[in-house]
Amino acid sequence: MWWGLLCALVAAVAYGVASVFQAVAARAVAAGDGGVDPRLLVRVFRQWRYVLGTGLDVLGFLAQLVALRVLPLFVVQAALAASLAVTAVAAMAIGTRLHAREWTAVVLVCAGLALLGASAQSEGSEPVGLAFHVGLLVATGVVGAVGMAAGRLRGTALGLVAGLEFALVALAGRIVSTSSVGAFFADPALYAVAVAGALGMLFYASALQRGGVTTATALMVVGETVLPSLIGVFALGDATRAGFGWVAVAGFAVAVAAALALARFGEVGS
Image (cartoon, rainbow, N blue to C red; front, side):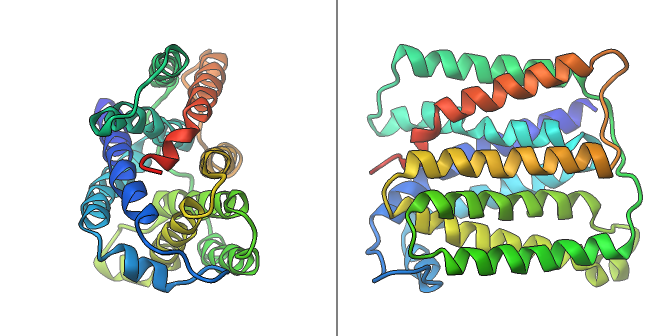
């Protein structure tokens, strides 16, 4: 189990540092006339900072997938929310100053993750039917359509949609079949991972351009942590060590709440 925790932390660090590069790149690119413009990803990928950030995202995603196979979703997703603490510290390299409130939040994130680590037990996902796998792919399309329809709204709405897409990435990554190469490529969950990941990146890049990014980032964190954590507990068999349920609840609440206090670091470089 310890290596699962290590992978979750590696993912948090990779995502957190990537956010600094991607936020700077996204704010340097001209916004579209309105709505969600898929060409935005083409424009941001012309920025070397965004390319570097995406490379770190790939590293973080691989580490996340490993963690998802052996840890409860509530532990992995809380660790990913903690990437905002990493972003806050990394932002000091480009001149951002952290105040006492923010340093306190960083410490609380670490404390919350420590409680989650102490409460977690090694997990293997309970079997789910093909309908669940297909359902995740359908949900990815539905959430994406909602995001496109809400594209002319402020970045707050797009931040929540991005968070829900990233939640679907986590759920699909947890259950995707690895029994054989054929089963892997035939699994609808694999394509849910790919499509939801791309849509999540698009919606969050759009949110970063639109103002109100602190709120958008906070809603993204809520979307990508709460939903998959609940589904993990009620549908996929996630549990804590015997007698450690309250420790897990406290750790999750502290880690996510402290991450929300650091949400403004979603707009580093603005």
